[in-house]
Length: 80
Image 1 (spheres, one colour):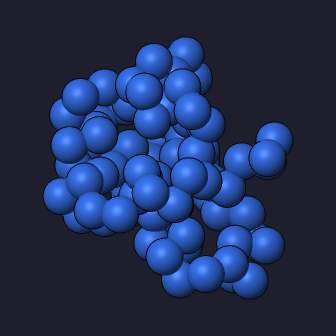
Image 2 (image 1 turned 135 degrees about the vertical axis):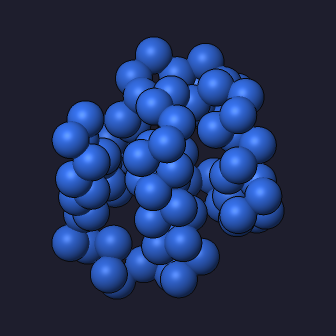
């Protein structure tokens, strides 16, 4: 998938893709938590991944993010 499900601007504005409304609630949870976490953690490092696991333990199993994000090597902090 090449689309972005959401983004969080440097000014703290969170934008979500409109077609996210038609997705499974677990996918919605992952995307929303992901973007909310970016209000405090601006990268996809270890702290970010740990907090994702604390708030949405199944996030990695859904396989909705780029493989490099799951591995912790994302080069774009806003990608999901």
